[in-house]
Image (cartoon, rainbow, N blue to C red; front, side, top):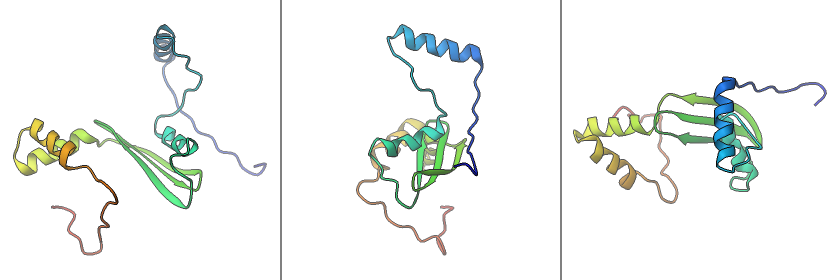
Length: 130
């Protein structure tokens, strides 16, 4: 609007950007859009997968980091990269169950998936440390 503006800043070393653009070009990929990783989660709603209604969060859990974006409708209100990912979860499972990492990863992938609706956890009196 005329009364306000929003600015998002991201940076990359020019040499790194040129290197990646050359890789894309060599693979016949046309990089027409370059964006900020965590904020790119918001583009999911523009693809018709998520309808922007009310407040919601998008969480992308990666191997060693996760990206969290919180939206109200189609407006991004918060974006953060967390230094916690799937590897950390696998290590926690391995430690808790006293099993090798390979077995913990199998548990995480095969058993830890949520199908349908996830159960609602009451946090008022819940012990979340176990």
